Image (cartoon, rainbow, N blue to C red; front, top):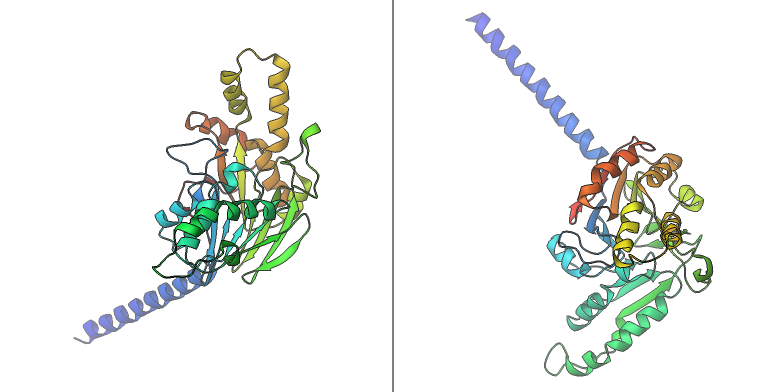
Length: 326
């Protein structure tokens, strides 16, 4: 009888020790878990339509705040599909003014205007003010024909939209988050290179609660980006299969001379990150993890792309899906 009681006491003590260890491990895991998350709303590269990937848009979300980075076509709907209420959204940051990164802004602004959502601030490179002014001007007929409620006063759409332009080297705070910007190489294009005072393509670093996140935006190899991404917890990087991109052009211009396709490949190599170049960037910056989005790689070429990436990067990497969270 005494032996049985002793065994029960020993068993109870053992279970208590196991429970304490489990609770301690859970507490440590919770303490280590980042309080901010990255939601890849749209992961398509370029303005081409896709049945499986939406246009570029990434949400940075943490308890009490969120920032939308880029607003490609369908961004508002993707927020809804992700189960995220867009009404509390206060801040949108644009990396550069290309159609696939800003095509959803008009829908965002018109919906917020018609539903009388709170004001919103749009941050972006030089040219953002002119672009948003044009979008607001296009809302003039909407202002005259669709007051939200019978008898409600007609409102000026511009009142609820603020624009802040930023450029290379700028630092600012958005919703309590420190943000740094660096101009990258996406706009370098020989005779077509724009004046930096009127247009820049930006990479961005966000010091979020619990983790630092760098979004490359569209870019080619860039020393400025390496410095910006130094030691980041997560690098959210664009990626492009250069050979596939050139092959796509060949189908539309089969009679172009070889020099044309050579120039096209050189252009893509300067303006975008191949798998090998993306790996070199991650390695040089010493980031902890890479999440690839703005994916310009076909499913048939994905195995080849991963092999090319492995030549220069052996760390954790994932090719994002639409609506996934990291």
